[in-house]
Image (cartoon, rainbow, N blue to C red):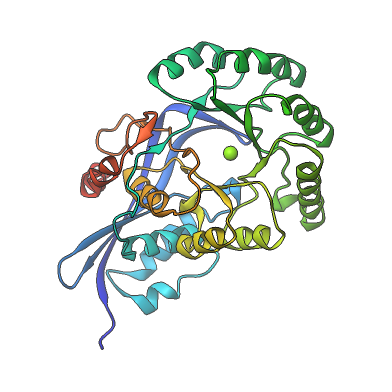
Amino acid sequence: MAPVEYLFAHRRYCLPFRSPVRTAHGLWTEREGILLRMTAGNGTVRFGEVSPIPWFGTETVDEAEKVCRALGEKVNDARLQAVPENLGCLRGALAAARLNLDPPTNPAPRQIAALLPAGKAALELIETRVDAGFRIFKWKVGVADTAMELGLLDDVCSRLPDGAKLRLDANGKWDRRTAERWLERCAERPVEFVEQPCFAEAAQGTVQQRKVEDLLMGLTEDYPTPLALDESLVGQGDVARWINAGWPGFYVVKTALLADPTTALAALEKAKAKVVFSSALETAIGARAALRLAFAWSGEPHALGFGVWPLFDLPGVNGPATAPFVRWEDVQRIEEATTWNACN
Ligand code: MG
């Protein structure tokens, strides 16, 4: 059989965020990425999106673009397989564009977590979000003074309706002592999990990274509130490594950052892992790929971290508008060609 050939096109984009995103590395003001279009011999057109987050340890957009250019206008599976392993986002986008997924066996709407801003600003927003029907809330912490944030925790919790749950995301900013103070405080409160309390970047060296991983493991044993890994799951290898280590907490999975999400998710499913699907702040093309995987997940459902759109002012490039639930119809309605054309 002749190898499957595709006409390949890529398009780099740079879209300013409607509001800048606060990260551990300062303000993130625009989303850069690459859209891919693959046309099969029978005329079928499929899309993919490379949306790296370099400070998570992924490739950069420049690195991915260089390889896209080298691929040229005609590609086949063998050439795509040869894309280097360290370009996980590009490999993942190429896989997404070729992935045939059956419609979900369970197309029931999936719950979405409402994002709350850091600090006091969260208090003003909770009521609106509760009235809109949200029941899972995510609050960024580790941004301001610890004592101040700890003081706000009860105010935030007191505004939650019965049965609602709060996720705290520290983005790896705490040291051991701060993490312990928070986890002591969270014990009796409706906290679903604490996301990435501590983290060591690759630049800090493997010794420090292993030390922090041991610390995370120790914290899950010492405190009742579950922990979640996010920054720790840079790529494919990390997911497998934490499964092997028997991580008992949640996995926040940004499928856009994985070279082979299907394999990683199968391993997580087999391990009966608690998975929270999460956005990498991508356009509608990446949103469609990620949400399709979230709907295909047959493990226990947890509210999705996709309450991010509209992220951009440009019409036609946003994923499904944030609501307490996302429906399968919302995913099907995404028109990838519209996004592709808008990023011209
Ligand atoms: Mg996070």
